[in-house]
Length: 279
Image (cartoon, rainbow, N blue to C red; front, side, top):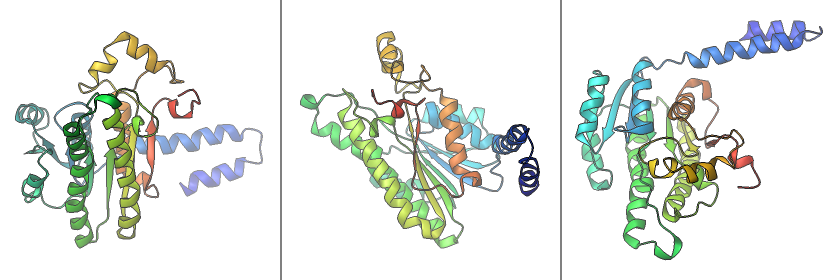
């Protein structure tokens, strides 16, 4: 990097400095694209489907010894066939009392992705206490319990680490018909910020990603409806929904040392939607 910077400073006096800038940033982008996690151990929750499943596959591809946690055995079995080296753990995060026992033999973890979540569709006047309890348990309480266990190990080993919570754009803007989902994700963002303050002195970074609707099974009821898709994309400057791979790439960046000075951040992956005053 010092060599590239020296080249840039040399050419800054010339008319073609823009070309050198391109070369400089190109080298950084290539480095990030080639991120490796060799020697690292990762835990991903909600690993059976959608974003979590793709995170697991990319982490394995990038060299991490990866533990996949899901409540559905069939999903773990099929994922194991795709990634024979992964370590599966079956656990229903709705039962938070079962989490310590499920993780007791998982060993040291360097990278944690709290991805598991549910999205209950409801409106203000129909929201049910049971749905509130379930949403907060899976989307907020479970990430806290898991992070406590994993962070304690990181602190004891004095190795530092990175935690990424998968939140939502719904935490940053009002979202009609998803009262409890939006509330739980806003709570998760608050958890992210507070954890970053308390764990930062131990060199543990904590961030969240806040994607717009991505084409996952959980959000199929939204994106599979042309009218809903048209409404959603109308306020996204890029004019489309997110691909799963686009969410995964940001998570990998936040897990990696390329983001070593990034913590306490809630990162929108929304095609510019949050920047739009009409949202």
